[in-house]
Image (cartoon, rainbow, N blue to C red; front, side):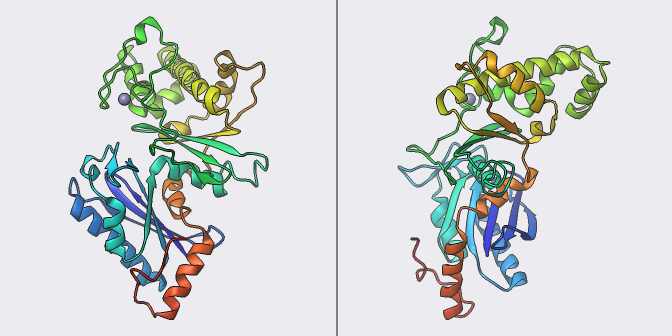
Length: 329
Ligand SMILES: [Zn+2]
């Protein structure tokens, strides 16, 4: 079996996938706030409790809100800042007694959707390149190429959120300051809170993004409609830049914003204005697994064949988790 762990800023979630991708168990605990050592220990005890209840060991993949530096093997670019600078793969491997694969959570999201979700081979048999984006409290992205998550030379493949918003209007320049140190990053315009803040700034008085979207749909809130149109235009510009570089077959949206259904109609209409091509037929789809995609994708960091191999090692040595017997192929 394969275990996926999503290490979030407030929750740590674990999921167990059967060989055919069916979810056998899902369990969630609080993340010890701001405490790295306690976070590692919490992942260890979550894995332990899952394996006790299932009665088997599994491979472990972990999605984190950041990336592991290929130079230092330590976490970088994480908005859960207590992870930054730590050798998380080593520490987690020590905590669970086996090799652990760690990847950016946006990469896990797109890996899940490309493996058995909205952009799977069953739905899009000819798709080779999938771009998945998270539009949530932050803006992230990941690329799956021929079934594999692409990490990249600097472990930042797909990270489009800290590029500048393309073709900025006068009122969008230089843009809001970003935590990365620059201004006008795509994330500052396209993260979920920014959509609602933009609407409120214009005088909108809906109480939530959901209410704002409902009001726009019923046609009785011009400010809501205008805010959504501004957002759609910005998202189209930002996506066009990725399409001009990567030209993916399918784009999967994730995060809270992906629940706004009109995007799947409005984006394909707006994008041709910005994409450098005489034709445009890239599919833009909602996620199949919703909030579960990140944790499912973490489990997909190992193949079922690798999980079988690991299981046979354990079967030969009882339920004692080996720390060195299993060698990563
Ligand atoms: Zn930034």
